[in-house]
Length: 340
Ligand SMILES: NC(=O)c1ccc[n+]([C@@H]2O[C@H](COP(=O)([O-])OP(=O)(O)OC[C@H]3O[C@@H](n4cnc5c(N)ncnc54)[C@H](O)[C@@H]3O)[C@@H](O)[C@H]2O)c1
Image (cartoon, rainbow, N blue to C red):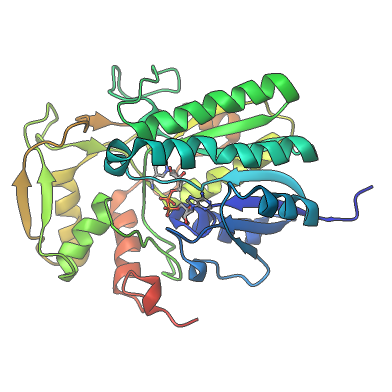
């Protein structure tokens, strides 16, 4: 019998979605929570609970990964660590394939060596590419249109091959648009550069940016602007706990979309943000960006059926309100502003 402490390893646990998930894990999991994050794009200050063991380093560092698997009995890995900018992936594809596809092999190799067979993977709607049907189920063709989506799809395939070879079991959580922050505003979203719509709108409202640019108003959508499915980060975090439970009960490898199933257009989001904050948004309209589909909305029925998961934040106003609270609270939307 192993005398090592049982733990769940969270890669990228100091990032936006990772830190919200770590917080929920600490509250609900019987196992120790161990984070491995380079802090290149994350924040040590987003890990609030002192019981969480943070290893600062790269997932591709095989010595460090081995140290973690030797020190703890890792029962499951939740893998968030990745680069996440579509535009950057187009400009620097090799950087994305190295970090998002190749680097996780070090984790998978350690899992195989140590007999850890449960893996939860932050996959993405970007693995689908241009939609051919709406809402999108997990059976939708996966034809990514940028290296970011392709780098994630390749890892899905690698994981399936590991399942065949040595019995790894995984849940691919294909998130749609992660948004919102912890309602107590103790942690939040702090990306640099910021590319997500809700924080960009709120930054334009708070004066941190001059305006928000809407890319394209001639899409075949009801008001001509892009429609997306915004899913609250706490709902995403909760799905990881449910996925752990599913794998713990012997569940086999599966992909699950995570969204609310409700599309919100950019124009609708501007109106909602104005109403939540009581302030007008300075907007300019630009051309469409290449590679932006008009509409992306999830069918998350499978997550409900297999994981017992459903989004609780179904009104996007509540999502915007939590993001606004983070941006107007002591942190002003930036971890550097918080003294801990
Ligand atoms: N934000 C979204 O809307 C969204 C949508 C779909 C999928 N995802 C996926 O969810 C995951 C988390 O996204 P996020 O928005 O929280 O991103 P994030 O950038 O805030 O978090 C990623 C974390 O991973 C760390 N990291 C990156 N490469 C690393 C490496 N090689 N070794 C160690 N740590 C490393 C970063 O420092 C960062 O803390 C990513 O895998 C992303 O692709 C995000």
